[in-house]
Amino acid sequence: MKFMVLVKADANTEAGVMPSEQLLAEMGKFNESLVKAGVLLAGEGLHPSSKGARIRYNGSQRTVIDGPFAETKELVAGFWLIQVKSRDEAIEWLKRAPFDGGAEIEIRQVFAPEDFGPALTPELRANEERLRAQAAAQQQ
Amino acid sequence: MRFMIIRKADAETEAETGPAGPEHAQLLKDMMAYNQAMQDAGILRGGQGLKPSAAGARVQFRNGKPTVTDGPFAEAKELIAGFTLIEVQSKEEALEWVRRWPASDGHGNVSLELRQLYELEDFEGVAGPELKELEQQMHASADVPR
Image (cartoon, rainbow over all chains, first blue to last red; front, side):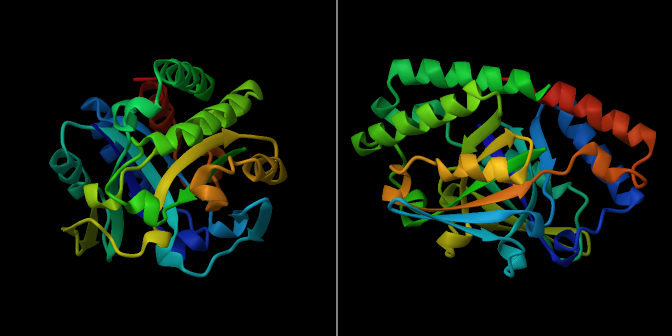
């Protein structure tokens, strides 16, 4: 099963403070262990919300609100996508991540095609799989 | 430049029923057509939908010690229900795509957040060459379809 690990924002990530070389090295080591175990599917870091925007939809109306956004601890600063056998395994991996100082991450299970039932017709499912393969190929 | 489109959670995405009901057939079709349009434009890089937070957990780190809290988490509108990754020329171009998000999602009432991704160049001066090499190797081995 796949899990998304969300790294919550804090004052530093929202100020665009880059991590120290030591933290980058520790994070690199952690990532390397995920890769070696065949667990890591993807991972990215996000710029501060000041470079982002929010869009709210009401009927045909689209309202764009430019960042920054105030509620720092509700924001996301980065994520990993991992593939493991169970939620416990996901938690065990993340306990080893080089965080401290009250940092919080959130682990969330990713929907698999089976979860959509008959609404995901064989045709839609084939289309979805083709799109995923194409998008992944362009990521290179 | 790459952007992450974050789909905020709501009462429906946090409900235990999941997306298997027939009422989701139209949404699935619309979402697929939207993803296809992004793919045809050559900008789609990935995306996933998240199960309700009841299937998840939070881990907080203090003094190097992790504390685990099981879901569900109460603040539905602060939670995330899914994301799409795109690569475009500007934030404006990203916003143009986001404005076209399918109206059948959330019965026309949805909140999205657009966020720019860090690239290797952003770590210039912090990361040594060996870290960059490691990062590149990681991406090469991790970004494969499964």
